[in-house]
Image (cartoon, helix red, strand yellow):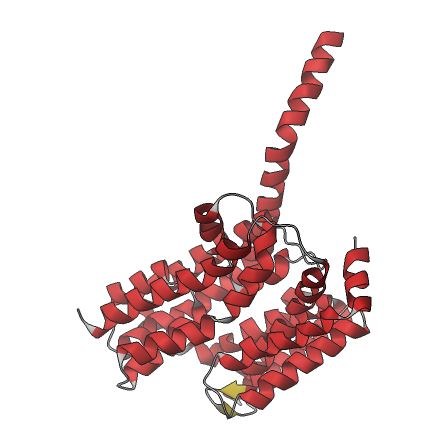
Length: 101
Length: 246
């Protein structure tokens, strides 16, 4: 098999297994109290981590780029207006504008 | 007349669940459309970059169809493109996807059915849908998840096809600022999650953990490790707050 075929098959199998593991092991049960408390706070923790790793990192390097400024501008828009679409449009426009400048 | 109204009521009762299901699914589709459009633009650049890494257009498209994991796919082709081994590429992709393990554990109690059915339902986990479907009380709206993921899947595959077959003509997606689209969406979702001082504290802690780990760990680990911040939820007051939410 070519490298591409091995990589694709390997990624498909591991991704399936990773997404299936939790639901297979823990599905259809009552929520213990402590579990609910942790799960309710997972979204803010993971979303913030996704934001900073997308906007402030490139591989293993921390960096500030045009997209960092764009995401910051988008954040201001959603914070002031509540519009997610506005946030995204402003983020892309600011990033593109800074790169063109 | 009376008999008819009774029959109607019975019909309404049996229909209630599927109708509600369809409503939730459609709501998910609607909520997922902007993410689907964004996924389409991002996967356009995946289609182009995959060929630079030595993948044929067909290979790039097949990968998006059967893997469907954005940042993991980019990481894998980047490693192959720079001469890395297939195993290293698969390992890096698995690490980047490791956050789905945490998301799957969180989602599990909200999924009905046997093991196989739950495993298949778990495939609908992607960042934006998972966050959209989270009700904030520890449970998830699975139909909202399915609807929102379906649109993103269509967008992701369509963009890959366009990028793989004709992407060179479209130029560099980074010039259009499209790499800022996903983090900006995550910021938008995050703002609605910051309900109280506790969730703000957890968000700040999660962000700090991720930033601290970026320079010293392989990509994927920082986001996975950030989930540790949610253990603040083990405190009694956090549990009460989660239960009290509507």
